[in-house]
Image (cartoon, rainbow, N blue to C red; front, top):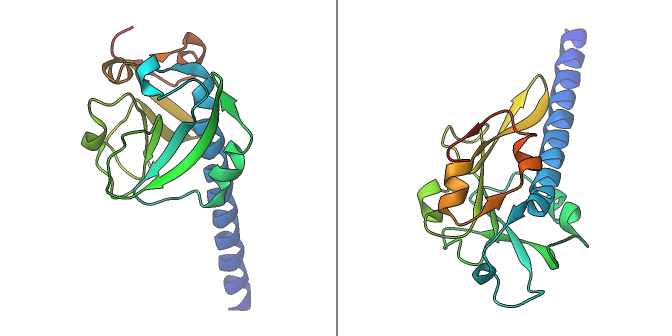
Length: 166
């Protein structure tokens, strides 16, 4: 009985460690994506204004995303992290759509929407999946183009799949 309890505790600890590592990898991806996406000039109020990575809905990252973004810049813009509830994604440049947030809320905005297979089957412009214990992603280029964004071919080449216009 003690051996079974110990095995369950170890399995739970490994699952927690894997979940923490998975969220850290996803957080770093969110920050790194910013170097490979171009936003329309109008998406920023001024030169040097912040590039906002927003977490909408349930936040699986905690402080991990804040630490990943700390001191980082993209395209001359300092990267900041914001949490948004049910309010609009207006002002966001990258939006991770967590549990409880609808993808339709991001329509007609210059926002790189990022969804997660762990949360929903609906896909944003970037959709995280875990394959063979590695965090990977799919890209919907048509969706990013409708948002007025241009994704670098270097990022497209790293995706498991790319769908939509090229």
